[in-house]
Image (cartoon, rainbow, N blue to C red; front, side, top):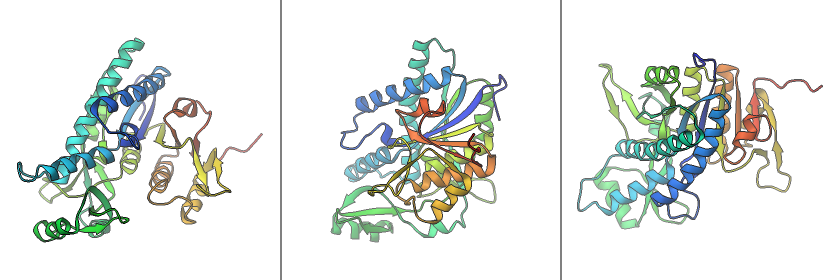
Length: 324
């Protein structure tokens, strides 16, 4: 889909660490400053004629909320994980929406911004639901971990010598529930924030009722799904590095400016992109390119504007244009 006014539609995904960076205290004031910086880049992209759907992560934020839940366990009832995901989707969306509104106003761009609380349906038969492997939340002592295993039937594992953590499944997203609303908002030239934290994971029962579950969804896969369903012209994944590297972290690491779909698939099969870092991003890119034939850009926030203009970042395309 493109806007009725003919604007190009870009889906832009970025992690929660765009607002809470490594080594920082994560205060709301600091997150707001990072959101303002992000909003300036997004406003520049909008000013160049793009409609936008923004999909953000929530890793640091939902982790902090789960620490608060644990610390308050003797005073207030604990919150289930789906409620925590929804809560951080709201708070991060508020910060982003406010910052982007202010930047658009300063730039004289007459566009509205809307944040959508997003239910995302997953398959109850997804094998990932039987394989809890995503660490989340606070670290526990051995005594507390044993108690939580017994009392709440949580799956808890030792995490890299740092303590014990809860692990939850990470199923694939199947359907973004408010997609018709997102489409309508875009037709009205609104900037949409949706799928925050990958969306709130729900299972759809035979009756059509939705039930929240203890799981998290990869935000890049949700963003790719949103982009596919909307027929987006471009999918942009923002990360910590300016581009994708082969042999990352080794002496022979090599930046990649362009990859064809087949090359990206081959590098994935050969283990070039680990599951804990670039793997989910490249996998999301592959799925988007395969289903739409449109390009994906993987880059950093600081290179985002120039990469969209064709200068920098890594662009993954269905096929590479022959050199002239």
